[in-house]
Image 1 (spheres, rainbow, N blue to C red):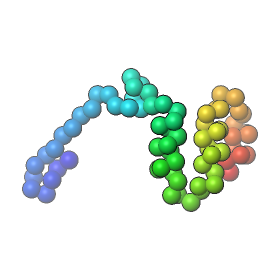
Image 2: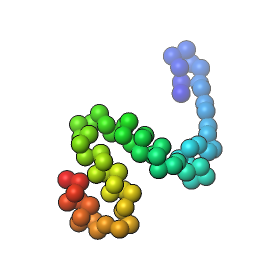
Image 3: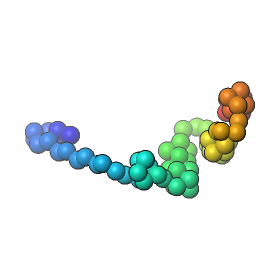
Image 4: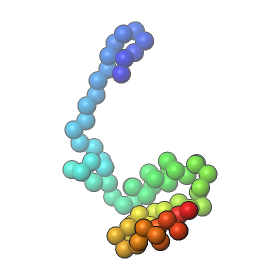
Length: 69
């Protein structure tokens, strides 16, 4: 980041929660998703989205789209 006084600040992270080396727990992931997506006007569908993502390997694309649209 370059500041208005010309100084440049750099921060590099090689690992963080959610990175493949430190996967986020399902609970933390769900809480973060609800915090980010909750104010976007589709609060009623958040539970359905979380349930669908948690079961992605078990549902067809057709069913996924039908339940989320």
